[in-house]
Image 1 (cartoon, rainbow, N blue to C red):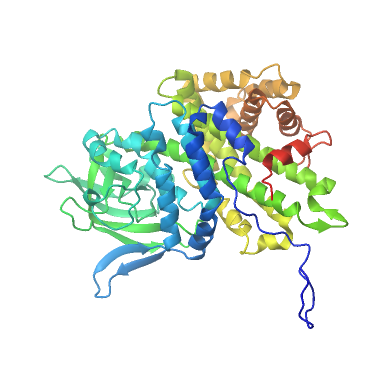
Image 2 (cartoon, helix red, strand yellow):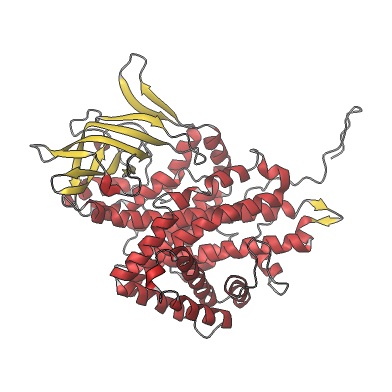
Length: 548
């Protein structure tokens, strides 16, 4: 556009236009194929409806919610303690859209239908591309259902409201709301992941409830209507549901000390709290706190994979969109051979991430009906959580570099993606915790190893690099004396081999071959953009592109 101002210094040219409205379901070939393949294709209409929102009006809501961080209101104007968190209206609109379309409850409302958890994973995957902060309370609300089912009276009261499509942010007792959310309070200052060192104490009350005294170092999403909390009893570490309001309707004795000043995840609130005799109800049995909450942790780890895969998708989409409009050295960036290598490699990593994520979602979905799927979910969740979440920061940074300097400017989504990228590798157990959990599962539950290798061997004979990798990864377990020391390398190789197996069976031979050659065959560098010249570059970029 020519500037008519006689004093203008320049015309603005060779600058891309922002990505316009698009449907994040219908334009995502890899996602749609994975969801259909894993049994969730019947939800196409629901997914398309949400996809139009995610690629449309929710984009602006995501920017606004992250530009206006939540604020802690400890006291009201008269000095009464209220412990409320104030959010920007955009955050509430994002939450309302998430619940309306089932990020919290779609899988449970369709529990008897095969593929319900796969379809719900797609909802989570798309929603995370507009804003990741809402995924924290949505993930915990979704994942709390199995734990609550161990307390039938609590389940009867709470589950219908936790799987509701209604979002109500008002600080009210749950009896006055049709839809509720739930958070978690597990870690304390002195222990972190080592929750058995928790010092919060729960003392039984005459009415069957408990009084909790102690602290939580990370009390996630403090605006939720209740939290699942770990505390010590005479019987050992136990799980409790701690509501925001007591049964008599009064505010529970939970004091928010501060909100965490986080690197990313700005739209969401995380807090530190003190329990000053807070009312709680036992979930499961005394002394069985970790086993009670472990299935919730497993589901939130799946959501970590979903969230990281979503960030890869959004980063890849932004890189391709920008480079297809920006020219340098006489041609579009997207037509430059080296840039095409980078874009294709980013797309390949994104495809592998969503393929693995949806396969594990199917294992979760089918676990109650199939022993193989249950064992696979047990072992593959830790493997996938470790690898996909580890790959995301480097992936997002490479995509950011494709945009150049503007990719470092807050007016684009790239800085937000980059700040968010490390979160899921820390949340719900760091990389070391995941690796040790994988080893623990393989050692204690031999059926998990059988399920994993059965799953990988299902693609045997379809690619020489893959066949060699299966032989190699099996041998990694021979030296048991150094296995824990080497466990990061072991889990990495398991992840790559499992991803290759999934892609080989997905039916796109060119993409599967490129993955096996680059990730398993040693024909790839240590950074993105080092694919072989014979890689299906055009095919990969085309599949990942949203038309301008």
